[in-house]
Image (cartoon, rainbow, N blue to C red; front, side, top):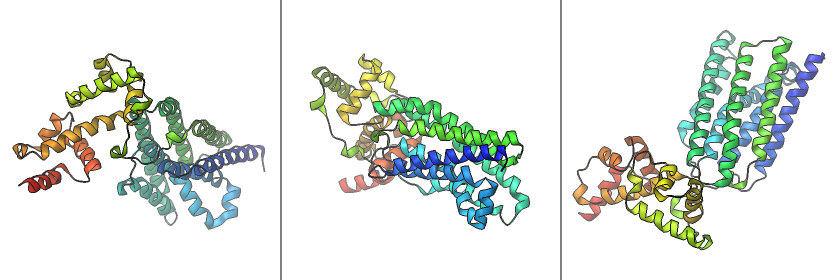
Length: 348
């Protein structure tokens, strides 16, 4: 074994060891949440990805390397799912979330019997991974804006830096692996990037708290914690309720900063008030609950029986019909049209 091979093997092995140590830490939490499960799959895939590229490993494993290599190739998609679940307190698995996994897996498997198309398959895979990383970076930035949990916002600040770094590193590794540069400098660069991602992941996961891997909750199960609030906070909470009853939530694009300005209190205090006093972990969920409650009243009112659903969505502050339909179905299990038909039938 040459010096280059020794350095490369050490770096990749070190990265794999770090990732597997983090898998054990995540799986030690009970109950195991969707975020912990996807995070563990991502880390396990990253560990496998680190070592299966080594010639000595591939030769020793033979055809048995295929499922392990598959897990490694899927790790960027698991990272995307991890970030999605981490920032969604009511995370639910949907069939379409498996599409990136299926595409990446198919592109890998098709190269085995048809080696000549490998470069095209790897290029498509690189495009998919780049899109996933771009979406992940956008997701982290958007969720940070609406998050109400103090500890998760502290973690979010770190993630706004770490996720782009991880994303860039993954894309860089994919590019170098795709073009299969065997030069010593390129091999050390790839190994260094893999080790760097492992170190970044250690920093990320070690900053996690239980609140960052939340249990699935529903808005209907939220409980008030007014007993733990100060007298001043209870007064502000009453003012907040008054603003909501007056229809503050109807303003399109309402941000927590704008709402804090209306109440003439600091934004961080309003975040704490909604989180500790009302039990919400996300500002968008808080606003959506008020909007959907209003929508249910109007849809059940015979005098609004012929009101267009699109018009109702705009009146409630939504900028398009899709987010309104999604928020409504999440809270009622029905579309607005189905809810209206059922409600008006009962009152007829």
